Image (cartoon, rainbow, N blue to C red; front, side, top):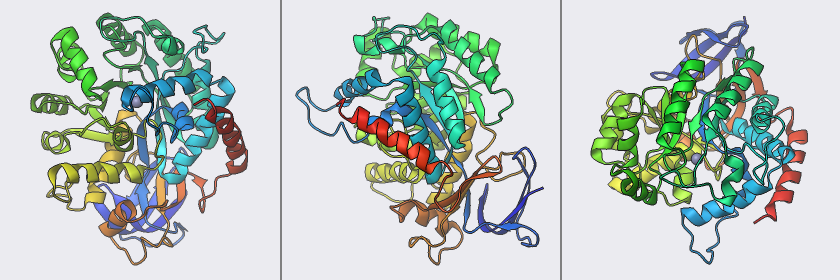
Length: 459
Ligand SMILES: [Zn+2]
């Protein structure tokens, strides 16, 4: 049985010294022993964190990161960004999607994400015609993930309408079209194709309340529970104030209230963003056990608003992080931004801590890794027996980490290292990044560069 030794490792209760980690043949952690000897073990070169789950990603949007920062003739809010995004979506071919997704996922690994939740809504050709294989683009993103070695939870999205009240799709949304039955077929296809791969999971993503009518949402949830009782369900919810206003006009209820009143939301759900909640909605969502999928850099980029972190945490709410539009590919950026936004709102420091865990960095990383893995139904997210051996090794040579011990290692990696502090990454007991290099760097990098060059002139 492979045995690893780390001078410092972030275990569920904090950073511990001299830790032996035993990994079985399936890539699962068999034992974690603090204050142990290094005898006979492979020495890990730096402090070890549990791999981070990226619970919300739209891979193709990486191709437009940084290309929507100009003030356009129609203004520069979320909705004009969305128009630019549709332009890129329309240009995606299966080959380009493969190249962009593989390049993005490889970058995720190098920066400390070991699992990704792909909220996937490209299903058809740009003109709305079917592909011969309705699961083609879903297969492509899953295969891209497994080619580079990141774990993936595919969340094919149901995007059936262009607005509340079952409005028809807009022309730019035609390739998103699908049905509850069509999505469940994709879930079934992926689950069968990857039955032997413990790093692949699948659930569904009703895109949002504006894009899915109540009956469709009901059919999707009921159908998924029949097919895969424990599978995750993710939904964009209350990201924008316009969405809240439109939901109120349509139903008389705010989005989170409507969702909780009309749908059996529980710990298998992830409410992505959940930015605009009243105090009552905040408490209600927290007590369901659903994970709030926070995407701080994208929410900042799009000017969404402020998540009520303090009240949600006080009510026992679970949170994870996602890269969403992929303006950032680093989990360190996401947790830092999450904390800084809260500091700016409340005009005080060290928000995401508790009496049990006084370190901001440790509190944020352990919580987001644990709850994020749960949101993706990935058996990872903590360094403890029974979890997959997904390890992120911090670079002891990084200038921000010199001389750091204990919780200060995690705090410094998050708050003081602007560039990437990760040097090695393991997924399922196998090293996929060694000394900042990946075996497929050249091949994946070349295809990614060619794809980005092709796509960049679309905007
Ligand atoms: Zn999203």
